[in-house]
Length: 144
Image (cartoon, rainbow, N blue to C red; front, side, top):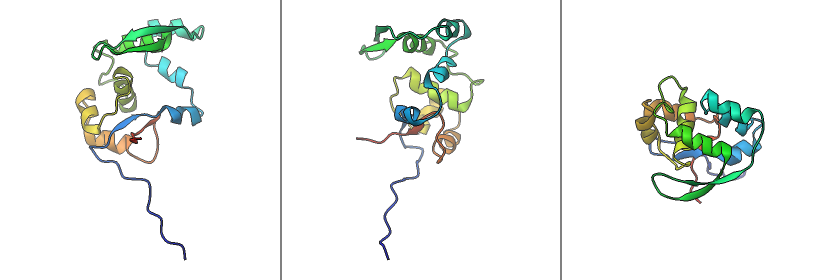
């Protein structure tokens, strides 16, 4: 009889940190670029659907003054994230949570923090992104 190994899966709580796990996207059959395009206003989206650009530009985070290299699509998303309706009640829960992470540079947040930003229930957020099913790479943040 083999000894029972403890589970490495811990049930998330309202205080568990979540983020976008980009490695999930690499393993997924979903197309991250196409999904990112859906977060742009239609008039900006049209600029990117015709051609793929890899031009990099310096982006200065308005809150932290941190300078990062972004491609044109990432820069357009940061511009869209500064609009007051980027996160709104008409946006699905998953898209709203994803947009929080797009807007904040993927800084891990708890369901409580996500609820404050999205206007959604922390419990509903936890039930959705804290389940075994992974939606759009939204997963618990594992400290390294």
